[in-house]
Length: 450
Ligand SMILES: NC(=O)c1ccc[n+]([C@@H]2O[C@H](COP(=O)([O-])OP(=O)(O)OC[C@H]3O[C@@H](n4cnc5c(N)ncnc54)[C@H](O)[C@@H]3O)[C@@H](O)[C@H]2O)c1
Picture 1 (cartoon, rainbow, N blue to C red):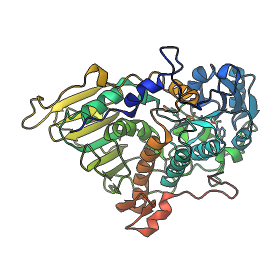
Picture 2: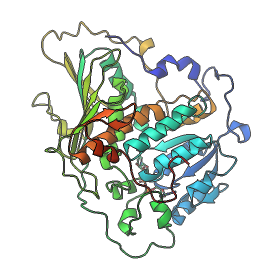
Picture 3: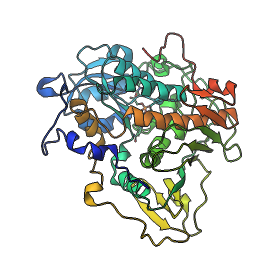
Picture 4: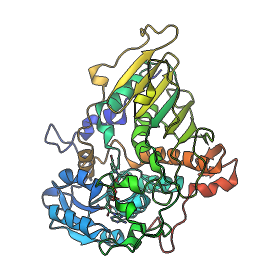
């Protein structure tokens, strides 16, 4: 088995940047930000809630624009960034001429729009997860990024990726510690009990622009429950409804599948099959709480074809042996190989040699030079990349394909059948009707590629 180093390792010397340590080597033509002292001029869209986790990093740059549909939230952000121009409509915000970069922390159903519109205006983007809400959105974001690769830095908000365990797990898997990789199982345990969009309740308060909150998706009546969560976890009050999110597929699925994705060097799946027995029935209003979806992932230059499975809200892979209770791991990944198993969560990993000839003499652990260097602060990695070599750990190529794959699982759930996938043409080949499930219908006047 060939050991492949993370791309970051290979480009490490060229990308050690701007954190004060060591030599800085910038590729020719690289620009710093437009602000004084080379600082980035940043627009923060979706300025409260999850955005607070970005305040610390972006406060060292110039936050020149903040945008939020909730005037109280905008006011909270304005306390932190008093010099920033204020907007309610992100489309107007993106027209501000002095911008370099955008941090997007809005609800999921606007992520692909804001990311694409920003890249189309030549802006670097950090977008909270998930990048899109359906196959088509994830693909569209990725394609616009690929057109701009070499000009823009992008980062998908899966900040757990910066934990050392991600690369240590990848080094074990790619280094052959469990032999030939066969199956990968990723899971999460969150559940919801919703069965329909919330009924109309009251009129939207003056401090919320409900029409702009709904944005590109179909109108649904206001109900205060959609906005009743605590800051940074309010997403759990709207992301189970199809028009607003993809529930755990895009929520913890983004983080947990990232732990797997980082270790498998994946290309697009050739098929997806949601397991109708293990999953909740399709509901046109809400995403399934319980879901199991299995993807066939083509071989690459260091492994054969593998099966990749996503489980949420109940269904779980079988434990390799009774004493290991996988259910005690809330969000985890199990890699099964010909000679053993790795079970990991975001911070820990267990290597279990299994079967015959598993004395581990076949495995050579990496030398210190082969070990991927720490990423450091994940948000800062993006800021440094905007000013430097544009390389990040979770750019929209890496993350776009991962989200496209996960969303194909939801499409299969809706179709009720396995879907054979021609990724080149983004087409379902065995069930033409299911092609409609790869996309969302937008309200008049909303263009994803604006
Ligand atoms: N990376 C992580 O670990 C992590 C953790 C929590 C949330 N998130 C992600 O962050 C995003 C926001 O989650 P949240 O819980 O903060 O949600 P939220 O409902 O609190 O929304 C965040 C902010 O966006 C504003 N907003 C809503 N629609 C807007 C629009 N069209 N234009 C501008 N502003 C708008 C809201 O008023 C709010 O201030 C979600 O996509 C979620 O998946 C990521």
